[in-house]
Length: 186
Ligand code: IMP
Ligand code: MG
Image 1 (cartoon, rainbow, N blue to C red):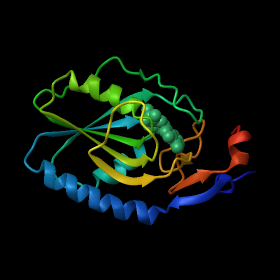
Image 2 (image 1 turned 135 degrees about the vertical axis):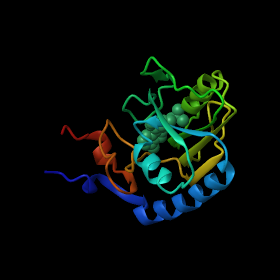
Image 3 (image 1 turned 45 degrees about the vertical axis):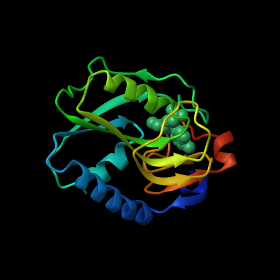
Image 4 (image 1 turned 180 degrees about the horizontal axis):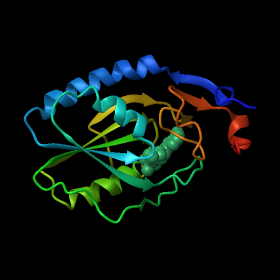
């Protein structure tokens, strides 16, 4: 059987590198939200590993919520369409909100989610992404907390997928051309 590792052309960020950066991000977030009512909202599925590792490094009281969003539709290119999969949005009245996503690519997803959550009138709204791709953004958008700036390559692992695969790799790698053209059927 083909292993997931065989499909990786190159490792971009090792697990130890990611976790060391999360220590820094978490420290910054802890300083910024001390004594404030904070709700962290993870954007699923991509942010699940990042969210879990980040939050366990933030030792202040906070609430956790998640939004299930479909924006990529499994391919290599962002479709530009963002679908909210749940009927109820989190209650953020009287709370500061930090949105957490895996990657800022075209910016369309976070732009749409920010508009939606912003309309619920939280005390403040900021965004945190693990990765920021070096591409011209379709939507006017920048994140407040960024783990790593990366080149414009299609990456998988640590929550990021290609056709729903590779999310459970503990590192972030560039997918090989072969794996892109011959996706796993498992
Ligand atoms: P945006 O709306 O174009 O900023 O895209 C954001 C979403 O696209 C992310 O939350 C990811 O789910 C997905 N995405 C963008 N680039 C990549 C990539 O290189 N690998 C896997 N998913 C990606
Ligand atoms: Mg995603």
